[in-house]
Length: 172
Image 1 (cartoon, helix red, strand yellow):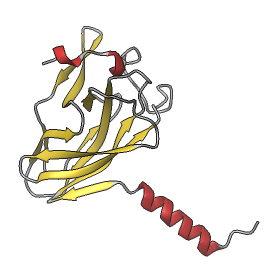
Image 2 (tube, rainbow, N blue to C red; image 1 turned 90 degrees about the vertical axis):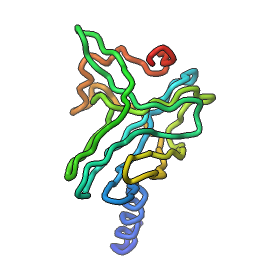
Image 3 (cartoon, rainbow, N blue to C red; image 1 turned 180 degrees about the vertical axis):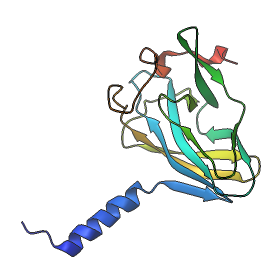
Image 4 (cartoon, rainbow, N blue to C red; image 1 turned 180 degrees about the horizontal axis):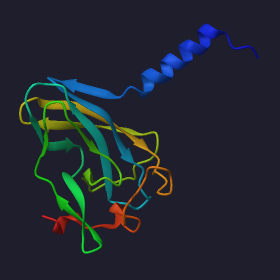
C-alpha cells in the first residue's frame, strides 16, 4: 500500500481538526473540555478543562450547567494527609492567565445523578457561565481514565478517591 503525501497531510489535518476542541467568547478560550469515563454503577462523574484569558480584564467562572440533576464546581484539598472535596463558588481568571482543571490537580466539575455511565467516545453539552463573558456553550468529550502511574500524573494521595462512590449531597 502506497500512501500519497497529500492524502497523508489531509488525514493529519482532519485528525488535528478533530482534536481542536476549544470554545471562545470575549477574551476567554475554554480549551479541551473532557470528562473521565466512569464505572458502570457510578452516579457521579468529573469534568476538566483549561480557561485562558487573553482579554484585558479578569473574569470569573461562576457556574457550569448541564443536563444532570446537579452540576457543581469542586476542588480536592489535602488536610492532615486526607484528600477531601469541597465546593468552589467561583474560579477567577486574571488577564493573561490560564487556569487548569485537571485530574490530580484539584479543581473539577462534578456531574451528579448520572443515569448511565460516561463511556469513552461519548460527548455531552454543557454551558460555562462567566460573570463578564456570559455563557459559553461547550462539549465535553468522554475520555479513558488516565493511568495514575503514567508520567506526569501525580495524584498526591488521591489513589483511593473514587468520585463514583462519593455522596456529594452532604458536601454543601
